[in-house]
View 1 (tube, rainbow, N blue to C red):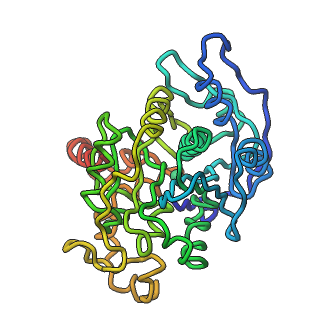
View 2 (view 1 turned 180 degrees about the horizontal axis):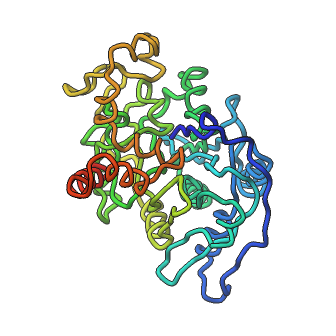
View 3 (view 1 turned 120 degrees about the vertical axis):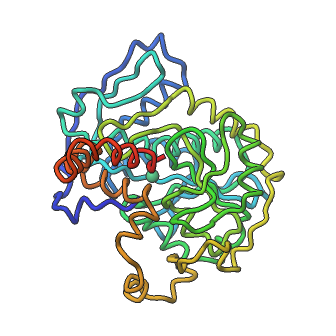
Amino acid sequence: MKNLRKAFGYGKYARKTEEPYAPPATQLSDDERNIIRLFKYMRPKGSPTEQAFVDTYLRPLGFTRDPFDNLVVTVGEDAPWLFSAHLDTVHDVEGIQSLHYGNDGILRLSKKAKRNGSNCLGADDTAGIWLIMEMVKAGVPGTYIIHHGEESGCIGSSDLAKGDPMWLSQFRFAMAFDRAYQTDVITHQMGRRTCSDAFAKSLSAALGGSYRPDDGGSYTDTNEYAGIIPECTNVSVGYRGQHGDGETQDVKFLIWLRDRLLTIDYSSLVIERDPTRAPWDDDDYLPFYGTRYGELSGADYAADVDFKELVLEYPDLIVDLLEGCGINKHDILDQVSLFYGYEKRVSACSGLIRRRR
Ligand SMILES: [Zn+2]
Protein backbone atom coordinates (compact mmCIF):
# COMPACT_ATOMS: atom_id res chain seq x y z
CA MET A 1 0.00 0.00 0.00
CA LYS A 2 1.04 3.50 -0.83
CA ASN A 3 1.47 5.49 2.36
CA LEU A 4 0.90 9.18 2.75
CA ARG A 5 3.42 9.81 5.49
CA LYS A 6 5.51 12.18 3.40
CA ALA A 7 2.43 14.14 2.31
CA PHE A 8 1.52 14.65 5.94
CA GLY A 9 4.85 16.09 6.92
CA TYR A 10 6.83 13.16 8.27
CA GLY A 11 10.49 13.90 7.72
CA LYS A 12 13.22 11.54 6.60
CA TYR A 13 13.62 8.68 9.02
CA ALA A 14 16.12 9.05 11.81
CA ARG A 15 18.49 6.27 12.71
CA LYS A 16 17.65 4.36 15.89
CA THR A 17 19.28 1.28 17.24
CA GLU A 18 18.83 -0.65 20.44
CA GLU A 19 19.80 -3.93 22.00
CA PRO A 20 17.57 -6.65 20.55
CA TYR A 21 15.49 -8.53 23.09
CA ALA A 22 16.07 -12.26 22.89
CA PRO A 23 13.63 -14.62 24.59
CA PRO A 24 15.33 -17.65 26.20
CA ALA A 25 16.76 -19.50 23.22
CA THR A 26 16.01 -22.98 24.53
CA GLN A 27 12.24 -22.40 24.29
CA LEU A 28 12.34 -21.53 20.62
CA SER A 29 12.46 -23.67 17.51
CA ASP A 30 14.97 -22.83 14.77
CA ASP A 31 12.11 -21.45 12.65
CA GLU A 32 10.95 -19.15 15.46
CA ARG A 33 14.51 -17.96 16.07
CA ASN A 34 15.04 -17.18 12.39
CA ILE A 35 11.71 -15.40 12.06
CA ILE A 36 12.40 -13.21 15.11
CA ARG A 37 15.85 -12.37 13.75
CA LEU A 38 14.42 -11.10 10.44
CA PHE A 39 11.59 -9.18 12.09
CA LYS A 40 14.03 -7.03 14.04
CA TYR A 41 15.05 -5.07 10.94
CA MET A 42 13.30 -1.72 10.45
CA ARG A 43 13.66 -1.16 6.70
CA PRO A 44 12.34 2.07 5.21
CA LYS A 45 12.84 2.08 1.43
CA GLY A 46 16.44 2.81 0.45
CA SER A 47 17.77 2.82 4.03
CA PRO A 48 21.18 1.37 4.97
CA THR A 49 19.35 -1.15 7.20
CA GLU A 50 17.40 -2.34 4.17
CA GLN A 51 20.69 -2.87 2.31
CA ALA A 52 22.21 -4.65 5.32
CA PHE A 53 19.23 -7.01 5.34
CA VAL A 54 19.78 -7.74 1.63
CA ASP A 55 23.50 -8.38 2.11
CA THR A 56 22.99 -10.60 5.16
CA TYR A 57 20.00 -12.71 4.12
CA LEU A 58 19.18 -12.37 0.42
CA ARG A 59 22.48 -12.22 -1.47
CA PRO A 60 23.68 -15.51 0.09
CA LEU A 61 20.56 -17.17 -1.39
CA GLY A 62 21.46 -15.92 -4.89
CA PHE A 63 19.19 -12.87 -5.11
CA THR A 64 20.48 -10.13 -7.43
CA ARG A 65 19.03 -6.70 -8.26
CA ASP A 66 17.18 -6.30 -11.55
CA PRO A 67 17.40 -2.93 -13.38
CA PHE A 68 14.41 -1.75 -11.31
CA ASP A 69 15.98 -2.45 -7.90
CA ASN A 70 13.89 -5.58 -7.28
CA LEU A 71 15.69 -8.66 -5.91
CA VAL A 72 15.27 -11.72 -8.11
CA VAL A 73 16.36 -15.35 -8.13
CA THR A 74 15.20 -18.32 -10.21
CA VAL A 75 15.18 -21.89 -8.87
CA GLY A 76 15.05 -24.83 -11.30
CA GLU A 77 13.77 -24.82 -14.88
CA ASP A 78 10.37 -24.97 -16.58
CA ALA A 79 8.55 -23.50 -13.61
CA PRO A 80 6.79 -20.47 -15.15
CA TRP A 81 5.49 -18.87 -12.01
CA LEU A 82 6.41 -15.89 -9.90
CA PHE A 83 6.34 -15.65 -6.10
CA SER A 84 6.61 -12.20 -4.58
CA ALA A 85 7.00 -10.12 -1.43
CA HIS A 86 8.35 -6.61 -0.84
CA LEU A 87 11.55 -5.49 0.81
CA ASP A 88 10.47 -2.23 2.44
CA THR A 89 8.52 -1.67 5.66
CA VAL A 90 6.63 1.50 6.67
CA HIS A 91 8.97 2.25 9.58
CA ASP A 92 9.64 5.95 10.23
CA VAL A 93 13.04 5.03 11.66
CA GLU A 94 15.59 2.48 10.51
CA GLY A 95 17.77 0.13 12.54
CA ILE A 96 17.12 -2.79 14.87
CA GLN A 97 13.99 -3.02 17.05
CA SER A 98 13.25 -5.23 20.02
CA LEU A 99 10.28 -7.59 19.96
CA HIS A 100 7.91 -9.36 22.30
CA TYR A 101 7.13 -12.99 21.50
CA GLY A 102 4.43 -14.47 23.70
CA ASN A 103 3.55 -18.06 24.58
CA ASP A 104 0.54 -17.58 22.29
CA GLY A 105 2.91 -17.59 19.30
CA ILE A 106 2.15 -13.95 18.53
CA LEU A 107 5.02 -11.60 17.67
CA ARG A 108 4.63 -7.87 18.37
CA LEU A 109 6.69 -4.80 19.18
CA SER A 110 8.11 -4.56 22.68
CA LYS A 111 7.17 -1.53 24.79
CA LYS A 112 10.78 -0.47 24.57
CA ALA A 113 10.68 -0.54 20.77
CA LYS A 114 7.63 1.75 20.78
CA ARG A 115 9.32 4.12 23.23
CA ASN A 116 12.34 4.20 20.94
CA GLY A 117 10.23 5.26 17.99
CA SER A 118 9.29 2.08 16.15
CA ASN A 119 5.86 2.66 14.60
CA CYS A 120 5.13 -0.85 13.27
CA LEU A 121 6.24 -4.46 13.47
CA GLY A 122 7.00 -4.70 9.75
CA ALA A 123 5.41 -8.13 9.35
CA ASP A 124 4.18 -6.38 6.21
CA ASP A 125 6.15 -7.67 4.53
CA THR A 126 8.90 -9.48 6.46
CA ALA A 127 6.46 -12.40 6.73
CA GLY A 128 6.37 -12.67 2.93
CA ILE A 129 10.15 -12.45 2.69
CA TRP A 130 10.63 -15.28 5.19
CA LEU A 131 8.26 -17.53 3.20
CA ILE A 132 10.15 -16.80 0.00
CA MET A 133 13.52 -17.45 1.66
CA GLU A 134 12.22 -20.79 2.91
CA MET A 135 10.92 -21.79 -0.54
CA VAL A 136 14.25 -20.87 -2.17
CA LYS A 137 16.22 -22.78 0.47
CA ALA A 138 13.97 -25.82 -0.05
CA GLY A 139 14.54 -25.66 -3.81
CA VAL A 140 10.89 -25.16 -4.79
CA PRO A 141 11.11 -24.41 -8.55
CA GLY A 142 9.98 -20.96 -9.65
CA THR A 143 11.12 -17.36 -9.91
CA TYR A 144 11.16 -15.29 -6.73
CA ILE A 145 11.00 -11.52 -6.62
CA ILE A 146 11.25 -9.25 -3.59
CA HIS A 147 9.98 -5.91 -4.77
CA HIS A 148 11.48 -2.49 -4.23
CA GLY A 149 9.37 0.32 -2.75
CA GLU A 150 5.91 -1.31 -2.57
CA GLU A 151 4.85 0.92 0.30
CA SER A 152 5.71 4.03 -1.69
CA GLY A 153 3.36 3.09 -4.53
CA CYS A 154 4.61 -0.24 -5.94
CA ILE A 155 7.66 1.45 -7.47
CA GLY A 156 9.70 -1.67 -8.33
CA SER A 157 6.79 -3.64 -9.76
CA SER A 158 5.33 -0.81 -11.84
CA ASP A 159 8.79 0.01 -13.22
CA LEU A 160 9.25 -3.66 -14.11
CA ALA A 161 5.81 -3.90 -15.76
CA LYS A 162 6.61 -0.84 -17.86
CA GLY A 163 10.28 -1.62 -18.46
CA ASP A 164 10.29 -5.36 -19.18
CA PRO A 165 6.80 -6.76 -19.88
CA MET A 166 8.39 -9.44 -22.10
CA TRP A 167 10.18 -10.96 -19.11
CA LEU A 168 6.95 -10.96 -17.11
CA SER A 169 4.99 -12.58 -19.94
CA GLN A 170 6.79 -15.91 -19.35
CA PHE A 171 4.85 -16.45 -16.10
CA ARG A 172 1.49 -18.21 -15.72
CA PHE A 173 0.79 -16.81 -12.28
CA ALA A 174 2.15 -14.19 -9.88
CA MET A 175 1.55 -14.93 -6.20
CA ALA A 176 2.23 -12.22 -3.60
CA PHE A 177 2.63 -13.07 0.08
CA ASP A 178 1.47 -9.68 1.32
CA ARG A 179 -2.02 -9.98 2.77
CA ALA A 180 -3.27 -9.70 6.35
CA TYR A 181 -5.39 -12.39 8.08
CA GLN A 182 -5.18 -16.17 7.57
CA THR A 183 -7.88 -16.91 5.04
CA ASP A 184 -7.64 -14.93 1.81
CA VAL A 185 -6.66 -15.87 -1.72
CA ILE A 186 -7.30 -12.56 -3.45
CA THR A 187 -9.23 -12.52 -6.74
CA HIS A 188 -9.70 -8.74 -7.07
CA GLN A 189 -7.42 -5.79 -6.36
CA MET A 190 -8.83 -2.25 -6.38
CA GLY A 191 -12.19 -3.80 -7.33
CA ARG A 192 -10.79 -5.28 -10.53
CA ARG A 193 -10.41 -8.98 -11.16
CA THR A 194 -6.75 -10.00 -11.28
CA CYS A 195 -7.18 -13.75 -10.86
CA SER A 196 -9.88 -16.26 -11.84
CA ASP A 197 -12.15 -17.96 -9.31
CA ALA A 198 -10.92 -21.29 -10.70
CA PHE A 199 -7.31 -20.43 -9.87
CA ALA A 200 -8.23 -19.05 -6.43
CA LYS A 201 -10.27 -22.17 -5.63
CA SER A 202 -7.51 -24.54 -6.73
CA LEU A 203 -4.92 -22.63 -4.70
CA SER A 204 -7.23 -22.44 -1.65
CA ALA A 205 -7.77 -26.21 -1.80
CA ALA A 206 -4.03 -26.83 -2.17
CA LEU A 207 -3.22 -24.59 0.81
CA GLY A 208 -5.93 -26.10 3.02
CA GLY A 209 -6.69 -24.54 6.39
CA SER A 210 -9.36 -21.83 6.14
CA TYR A 211 -8.22 -20.44 2.80
CA ARG A 212 -10.89 -19.35 0.32
CA PRO A 213 -11.19 -16.88 -2.56
CA ASP A 214 -11.71 -13.25 -1.47
CA ASP A 215 -12.53 -10.33 -3.74
CA GLY A 216 -11.67 -7.60 -1.22
CA GLY A 217 -8.03 -6.92 -2.07
CA SER A 218 -6.70 -3.37 -2.07
CA TYR A 219 -3.51 -3.57 -4.05
CA THR A 220 -0.03 -4.92 -4.00
CA ASP A 221 2.73 -5.51 -6.56
CA THR A 222 1.02 -8.35 -8.44
CA ASN A 223 -1.76 -5.89 -9.39
CA GLU A 224 0.81 -4.21 -11.65
CA TYR A 225 1.14 -7.45 -13.63
CA ALA A 226 -2.59 -8.07 -14.19
CA GLY A 227 -2.43 -6.95 -17.82
CA ILE A 228 0.46 -9.33 -18.56
CA ILE A 229 0.30 -12.45 -16.32
CA PRO A 230 -2.89 -14.59 -16.37
CA GLU A 231 -3.35 -15.19 -12.64
CA CYS A 232 -2.27 -12.44 -10.21
CA THR A 233 -3.13 -12.98 -6.56
CA ASN A 234 -2.20 -12.11 -3.01
CA VAL A 235 -2.26 -14.63 -0.14
CA SER A 236 -2.85 -14.04 3.60
CA VAL A 237 0.29 -14.57 5.67
CA GLY A 238 -1.04 -14.12 9.19
CA TYR A 239 -0.29 -10.55 10.17
CA ARG A 240 -2.85 -8.04 11.45
CA GLY A 241 -2.93 -4.30 12.06
CA GLN A 242 -0.22 -3.61 9.50
CA HIS A 243 1.25 -0.11 9.30
CA GLY A 244 0.55 0.57 12.98
CA ASP A 245 2.38 -0.08 16.27
CA GLY A 246 -0.26 -2.67 17.24
CA GLU A 247 0.75 -4.85 14.27
CA THR A 248 1.07 -8.55 15.12
CA GLN A 249 2.30 -11.71 13.40
CA ASP A 250 0.99 -15.17 14.16
CA VAL A 251 4.28 -17.04 13.97
CA LYS A 252 2.83 -20.55 14.33
CA PHE A 253 0.51 -19.83 11.41
CA LEU A 254 3.42 -18.54 9.33
CA ILE A 255 5.36 -21.76 9.96
CA TRP A 256 2.29 -23.83 9.09
CA LEU A 257 1.86 -21.87 5.85
CA ARG A 258 5.53 -22.42 4.96
CA ASP A 259 5.03 -26.17 5.34
CA ARG A 260 2.01 -26.02 3.02
CA LEU A 261 3.85 -23.93 0.41
CA LEU A 262 6.69 -26.47 0.29
CA THR A 263 4.35 -29.34 -0.59
CA ILE A 264 2.08 -27.84 -3.27
CA ASP A 265 2.33 -29.04 -6.87
CA TYR A 266 2.15 -25.61 -8.51
CA SER A 267 1.79 -27.08 -12.00
CA SER A 268 -1.64 -28.44 -10.96
CA LEU A 269 -3.17 -25.00 -10.27
CA VAL A 270 -5.91 -24.05 -12.74
CA ILE A 271 -4.92 -21.22 -15.11
CA GLU A 272 -7.98 -19.66 -16.69
CA ARG A 273 -7.87 -15.87 -16.88
CA ASP A 274 -6.86 -14.09 -20.09
CA PRO A 275 -4.83 -11.03 -19.12
CA THR A 276 -5.24 -9.38 -22.53
CA ARG A 277 -9.02 -9.31 -22.27
CA ALA A 278 -10.50 -6.31 -20.45
CA PRO A 279 -12.77 -5.88 -18.68
CA TRP A 280 -12.34 -9.28 -17.04
CA ASP A 281 -15.68 -9.24 -15.26
CA ASP A 282 -19.14 -7.86 -15.92
CA ASP A 283 -18.85 -5.99 -12.66
CA ASP A 284 -15.48 -4.50 -13.56
CA TYR A 285 -16.73 -1.11 -14.59
CA LEU A 286 -13.83 1.11 -13.64
CA PRO A 287 -11.05 1.56 -16.20
CA PHE A 288 -8.00 -0.44 -15.18
CA TYR A 289 -5.53 1.90 -13.56
CA GLY A 290 -2.40 -0.13 -14.18
CA THR A 291 0.24 0.03 -16.85
CA ARG A 292 -1.40 -1.92 -19.62
CA TYR A 293 -4.74 -0.11 -19.67
CA GLY A 294 -3.36 3.21 -18.52
CA GLU A 295 -4.21 5.08 -21.71
CA LEU A 296 -6.75 7.13 -19.74
CA SER A 297 -4.75 9.80 -17.91
CA GLY A 298 -5.07 10.11 -14.13
CA ALA A 299 -6.78 13.51 -14.52
CA ASP A 300 -9.39 12.20 -17.01
CA TYR A 301 -10.09 9.25 -14.78
CA ALA A 302 -10.44 11.28 -11.60
CA ALA A 303 -12.81 13.81 -13.23
CA ASP A 304 -15.48 11.12 -13.62
CA VAL A 305 -15.21 9.63 -10.13
CA ASP A 306 -17.14 10.80 -7.08
CA PHE A 307 -14.93 10.94 -3.99
CA LYS A 308 -17.56 9.50 -1.62
CA GLU A 309 -18.34 6.65 -4.00
CA LEU A 310 -14.65 5.87 -4.18
CA VAL A 311 -14.49 5.67 -0.37
CA LEU A 312 -17.50 3.31 -0.31
CA GLU A 313 -16.11 1.22 -3.15
CA TYR A 314 -12.69 0.63 -1.56
CA PRO A 315 -13.16 0.50 2.24
CA ASP A 316 -10.09 -1.71 2.79
CA LEU A 317 -7.89 0.67 0.87
CA ILE A 318 -9.24 3.74 2.69
CA VAL A 319 -8.58 2.08 6.05
CA ASP A 320 -5.00 1.35 4.95
CA LEU A 321 -4.53 4.95 3.85
CA LEU A 322 -5.95 6.33 7.11
CA GLU A 323 -3.77 4.02 9.20
CA GLY A 324 -0.78 5.12 7.15
CA CYS A 325 -1.57 8.71 8.18
CA GLY A 326 -1.80 7.73 11.84
CA ILE A 327 -5.62 7.85 11.98
CA ASN A 328 -7.08 4.87 13.83
CA LYS A 329 -10.58 3.66 14.70
CA HIS A 330 -10.58 5.60 17.98
CA ASP A 331 -10.09 8.85 16.06
CA ILE A 332 -12.99 7.91 13.78
CA LEU A 333 -15.21 6.98 16.76
CA ASP A 334 -14.40 10.36 18.37
CA GLN A 335 -15.51 12.14 15.23
CA VAL A 336 -18.66 10.02 14.83
CA SER A 337 -19.53 10.74 18.45
CA LEU A 338 -18.92 14.46 17.90
CA PHE A 339 -21.11 14.65 14.82
CA TYR A 340 -23.87 12.18 15.61
CA GLY A 341 -23.90 11.78 19.36
CA TYR A 342 -23.94 8.49 21.28
CA GLU A 343 -27.04 6.79 19.74
CA LYS A 344 -25.94 7.03 16.15
CA ARG A 345 -22.40 6.37 17.12
CA VAL A 346 -23.12 2.75 18.04
CA SER A 347 -24.83 1.83 14.77
CA ALA A 348 -22.45 3.84 12.62
CA CYS A 349 -19.53 2.23 14.38
CA SER A 350 -20.71 -1.36 13.92
CA GLY A 351 -21.24 -0.56 10.25
CA LEU A 352 -17.72 0.73 9.96
CA ILE A 353 -16.22 -2.32 11.57
CA ARG A 354 -18.32 -4.73 9.49
CA ARG A 355 -17.15 -3.00 6.36
CA ARG A 356 -13.53 -3.52 7.30
CA ARG A 357 -13.80 -7.31 7.11
ZN1 LIG B 1 2.69 -4.96 2.10
